[in-house]
Amino acid sequence: MAVRLLFKQLNILKNKNCRLLCTGTCSTLSSNKNNIDNDKNWKEELLKTMKIYPDFINKDEEESLFQEVEPYMKKLRYEFDHWDDAIHGYRETERSKWNDVNKIIIDRVRQMAFPPGMPQLRYVHVLDLSAEGIIKPHVDSVRFCGDVIAGISLLSDCVMRLTKVGDEIKCREDFFLPQRSLYIMSGVARQVYNHEVLGPNDSIYQGKKIKKDRRISIICRSEPDTQQSS
Picture 1 (cartoon, helix red, strand yellow):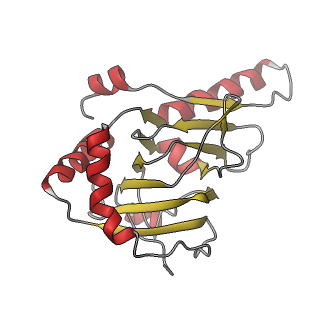
Picture 2 (cartoon, one colour):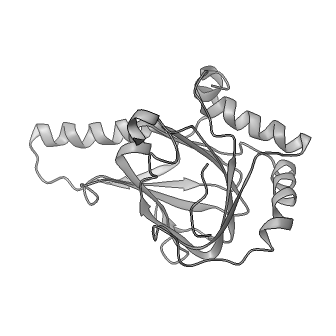
């Protein structure tokens, strides 16, 4: 496509079920206490705003979502030229209507991810990444979405890497996104960090090779801040 498509449960539930699956590297340039504190601060700040919920959906729910989107997705060709060169080996669409079963799942994502009263994009982004596909480091434009991005991973595990804009070597963290998990990216993670999905050759987490196959993401986003995007 020529143009990229737009797109607590209670805090008690979040705290109970949330398990951060991540590992990172931070090169300590000095033993100076300020540097140590800074290294600690960037990681704490990031982990507060990039959260992963394993097994957010079960196998039946995954299959239900897949069966609803697959008839249309398989008609599309995988593309390798994205308008901002951020994605290679992808196809995508957006949906505003879901069957009754899947609407309940989408509503659960929205309830989990977005604070009460936060305006949300009506359309859900469906992003199909081929087994060989990659998402390059980028920060989603504030013209197209707001402060919260929430996505379910169908069909495959993957590794998502976040790197701080302007300090990519020092401040880098890898997150393992299991199949059927939900990730919620907001605040610092959304605004200050590039995010990317590693390709099959680079998908290594905690020293273990992660098998990355075709992956479909079901992504909900908050509306852009009109003042920020103007």
